[in-house]
Length: 368
Image (tube, rainbow, N blue to C red; front, top):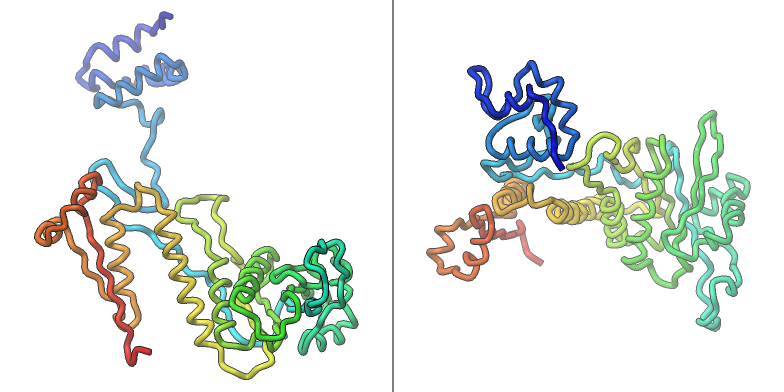
């Protein structure tokens, strides 16, 4: 197949001029030739011209748009990796007085040890909803609203048999202000305190709920005495903050999603006067570690390399509390001095110099 080029284009390509290179379009022909780039033959010609050091008009191919994140260039690798910020939602112990959304934890009846394990969910008889302590008081105040909410969603919610299951919200106007109530399944009524797996399911479910219900600023979770152990609250906090993680580093425009963006705080209402601040804070620290791991795993190769990973490790050490983490980075020369041939052999396949990272954690005070 022959491709016919307009004479003006051929002259511009083949004949150098004093004002433009031999491989650039003059301003007088740019407008007429830009539309021709849609042709496969001309597109191939244009790309080959760029590869040989030529150029097109700025309007034809523009690569100058600023990126929203650090990345590599042709001459140098990316030297740092951005971190996703922590969620701005505060998790604390308090009551539901000022909450826009109230999540009420409810139990299903205790498991009948005499029932057959082969029975399907449909065959199992739905037992009565178990409202304990503050949940029972609230249902009485709301004139049976919580029991009605469970009954309306009986098929899906099954009175909270599955830990972490939730109902749709019921709206109530109190003092001229609309408030939403949601039931949170705590599983069958246990004989012992709730275990860590169940606590993490509940924390993740609460985080999902406050994200799903838009236009709320404060939320509250009412939990029974089976969740008053400090370790249980820690697991709840870890799962809560972990589920609010969202990697927006490489997203722009409408693709950016901030979990529970309008929410300022979530209060945990417990029948205990114990201080759970330390447990909640420990859960947040653990969630930060999980989020950092996700940041590293999610970063593509044009962002994450030996240099940017070493920078991340150094920043972790610098920002550690009371300097409890120290970091030592061994470069190529230090690795050669130590005879680390196998490591250096693998590192030769990388575009960046090897960085052997050694992190040491030394807690302050007495080590238990």
